[in-house]
Amino acid sequence: MSSPHHDTQTPPRPQEGQWGEEDWVALLQRLPQGWQEQAIELKAWQRTRKVACVSDLLRALLVYAACGYSFRQLGIWATLVKVGSLSERAWRKRVERAQEWITWLVGALIGSQQRPGWLPRQAGRILLVDATRLKWPGGGGEDVKLHCAYDLLAGRLTQVQVQDRHSGEGLHHFCLQPGDVVVTDAGYHLSSALLHTEAVGAFGVHRLSAHQVRLEREDGQKIDLKRLLKHQKYGTVSEYRVWVWDALHRQRYGLRLILALLPRQQAMKARARKRERLRRKQGPNAKLAAAWWAGAMLLGTTLPAEQWSAQEVVKLYRARWQIELLFKRLKQGLQVHLLPVKVWERARTYVQLCVLVWWLHEQEAAELSGLLLDLLSEPQGEWLVVVQEGEERSVEAVLSHTGVSTCVLETVRMALRGSWSRQRVQECLPQLRRYLVSRPRPRRPSQEAEVQLCLRLRFAATPCLLL
Image 1 (cartoon, rainbow, N blue to C red):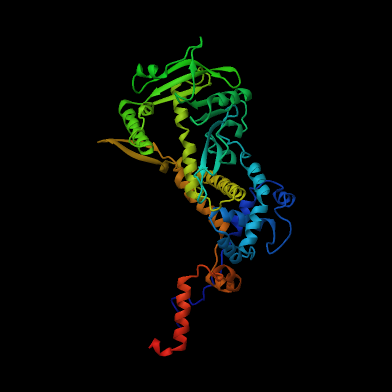
Image 2: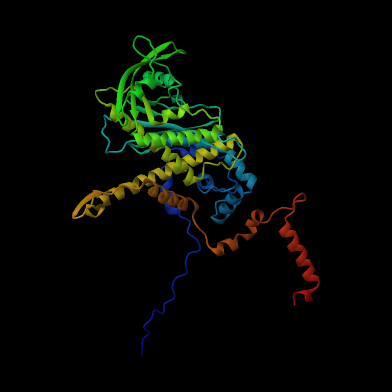
């Protein structure tokens, strides 16, 4: 008897849906202890009504922020993955009730991570401090402000504050520790920053603006910064000892003034870009005198000169660009630059949910980066670069933080969102009817639906028209 050469066994039927339960359980294990009890205590979870447990509620809230869903889309997703079939209004109420609980989760998670093992114990934190503006539809552009402190050595967020547009930039939003090095831009008031860092025993590196602060010599005479810079060569760094008078607190602070001039070509290009921005903003009668300062960097620091040279301080401040890249990845990855809600309380909860998703992303990204670094430590992790003809040199490969962030963020989305089959959608059509069928609109009826209804009735009355 001949035997067939091909496989005659029927393959198993594929699963109807992949809900990502294992990945979701792994994400839940990263949450702090007592997070479910806090949901009950803070009234985020009051009764079981179509949502089985607290973890399902948290998953729905995270999907709402991670995927940028509307409340109608959130209802469709929750129905398909068997989280709960609630109306749009019911989901909106769930988000509003969870405000205090989400605030507690953000405070319990951000900044509570363990210190990386490769950092020396005596090394203090280097905090890059800045704020970014978020807009809601029809707003003025800075409706919500997100104040963040980014640990440069650990490569993650340590403190986050979500405030309205009336809150200005300042170090009072953050909790500093003795020995911390705080790096700020010119948007932070110098006197207030010096007062705050001195009170806690921290150090600061602050960007200065010539027209915002008065710098004095030891005898109290004002320092002409432009005169100092005109006598300095391009591409050099100089240092002076200056004092700042705080008229509000009636105090005088001493600090190191570091003046860094760009190379001549770079300085000219920077001033040209500044002049172009001033013309676009102020018109043909723009005052272009401020563009001269674009080729210089004015820094004030309280770091000891024995440990930090002027060139190292300049290099440290230039690393402040990393928090700008963090804001860029956060806004591009989670689309948080334009909030989908207008109410302040709901917008604050949405931003905090996005921060929670970003925290989960940071944990996964840290593990993936560790695995990649292990691979790069092998001989295959080196790139062969041709310097000149006949001369070759191997250099170490560098991780792409943007690529890692994009990959991990999509992985977190998949773990939260899951997937479903076509059969599952067909089974849930009775529950999905409330989301997919629009209500009658007497003021602005749907033109397409109205025309289709008229044609359907006409063709049903006269079938010959179809021939």
